[in-house]
Image (cartoon, rainbow, N blue to C red):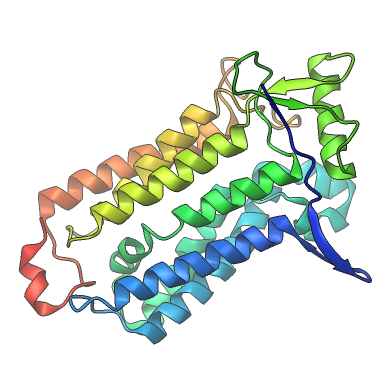
Length: 295
């Protein structure tokens, strides 16, 4: 088994201002998305301009942050916010919902597409391969924070989490899990579900979609594939991830909120992918010479 490293969630602080790994991971994610989008826009067959990319990433970042936080409050943290309203703004402690962020991005992209006279589906397809590295970075941030652990296990790749040497936020979460699972003395052996998610929903999703979108695809095919891949990966990891204590299992003693939110993604993604290849509509993300080559 692997000892969990006690990494301070705070990189450095100046007076009351603290720079945290969790926040830095979001910056890394947005920077990676911007760089990748600029690379795609620079291709000779692309219909995108560099300035459009800058605005798109800005709109998407706002959608991720606002949607992710509001989604967490709605899907997971409503009771906590009611008991402590200030918790709604303590984003540095974690508490972001991917599904809420996705909704936020959809709304932000809709506004962007209308302003720039672009087709909404084309903008979604252009974005589809970009979030993967950011998701990976965000899950590493969860790992450093010591949150979203998986279930107890004796697997050789499990992490040993001893609260004693940990920092306060990490220690508190570990002690909560020990109490929840009746572990005494409190030394956990758990799945690193944060890293599983980072590798599957993040790195794997990025590699597949980046390769898939290297050549023109029918309109909405990249978006459909994104929804399927993320939904399937999240649904699988939820089997070993500990559900939020205030939610628990919602159906059949094994279905979690994450699975309920991911299932529609899989269904909608499959419909979009099938529709895309049936209709064979050319994407507006490519120049005139490329429009006839979508396949």
